Amino acid sequence: MSGSRGRLTVITGPSGVGKGTLVKRLLEKHSEIWLSISATTRSPRDGEHDGLSYFFHSRDSFDRLVADNGLLEWAEFAGNCYGTPRAPVIEQLDAGRPVLLEIELEGARQVRRTFAEGLQIFLAPPSFDELERRIRGRGTDSEDAITRRLARAHEEMTAQSEFDAVVVNDDLDAALAQLEALMQLG
Ligand code: ADP
Ligand code: 5GP
Image 1 (tube, rainbow, N blue to C red):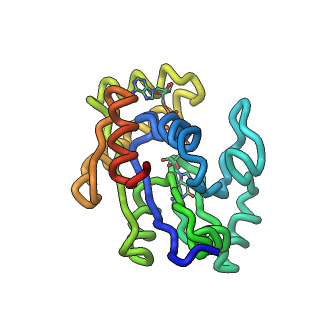
Image 2: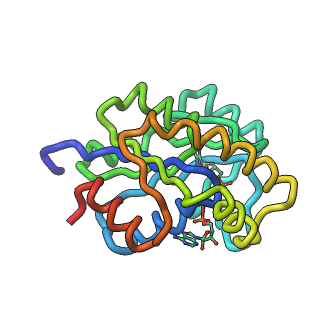
């Protein structure tokens, strides 16, 4: 076991800004990072698998996780519940690994209260029009889901100043380099 505790990093940003794309690139380059897999009541999208993308739950079993204090944080987002399983995060930090959470704003706020020493990064789009183009271009969400996500994006964008750092995901490589520098990755 490593002598020092791992560092916790939270990445938050509006749906469609490119969080998933950037996190994937980070993990490909830095195999030491441990990414938390969230629990959700959302239905799997094409290509998503239980235990890899998310742990997919019914509302009842998600409520049981909450009641058993099994989640480090949880929130409702665009009509579904999402939460971070507590035990594996603690285990990985104790083992000295850098831990990454990719979660929405309310969850980030909860984590800030329990892990004040964690690094909180807000990923912002170059513009709102570009954000809408990306959500639509991804082609994974219904029109109703897109409307909810864009409305929520407006709220999330106003919270940028709460974060330790804001990274604008305009050029993907430049954004990746900024994340690496903030997370002090070699
Ligand atoms: P999120 O996880 O934040 O919801 P995704 O990673 O799914 O967002 O990205 C949304 C869409 O935007 C995807 O189609 C992705 O390929 C595209 N995208 C991500 N980063 C960039 C970028 N820097 N420039 C242009 N398109 C991008
Ligand atoms: P999606 O449905 O696009 O996969 O995710 C929707 C939103 O939920 C994204 O903003 C994502 O960051 C957030 N999210 C994913 N997992 C969690 C989690 O465990 N907790 C919280 N609070 N938000 C999460």
